[in-house]
Image (cartoon, rainbow, N blue to C red; front, side, top):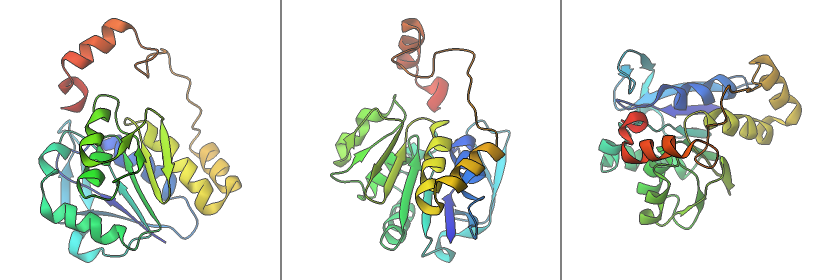
Amino acid sequence: MQIAVLLFDRFTALDAVGPYEVLSRIPDARTVFVADRTGPVVTDVGSLTLQADATLDEVTRPDVVVVPGGPGQIARMGDSRILDWLRTVDATSTWTTSVCTGSLLLAAAGVLHGRRAAAHWLALDQLEAFGAAPTGERVVFDGKYVTAAGVSSGIDMALALTGRIAGDEVAQAVQLGIEYDPQPPYNAGSPATAPAATVAALRANPSLVLG
């Protein structure tokens, strides 16, 4: 089973690496990082790169597609090469997935039209412009499409998908193996629970988290 993780300049690291840490542990999984060129691809912070193993032309029929988000997504919304690749691989994929604003790239490619989808809460309302139905849920399954909310939710998405692919026992073993047992020091991970001033500050300046 081939899992293709799309990379582009200024993607958010955890959007890609979180699902990778989980999905790469599925038995017989082969993970490939794919971009419009091979070599290092810089993240949104700029101090970290991931290595693209293959070009878009070289990966044409992955079983699972993972699309991260990040501020670099904005510049790719009209990138015909990436959008065409997403449409091509989606035609034969078993699962097409995204994390954070990666769902906007899927939506721009037209594959989420009429489907429920998640995105980072600061970008959620943008899905409607592409015919998708935004939802505030952390992980959304709609047919073969699995979309996750902001950054850290990619781990939840990947664990849920692992359960669908390999069964609950495998997914639970992976969760235990990576010791994914979140106990955050603050109850501020959602606009519904974070302090109102914090929510207002991010709404006023989304670039603090979305670049």
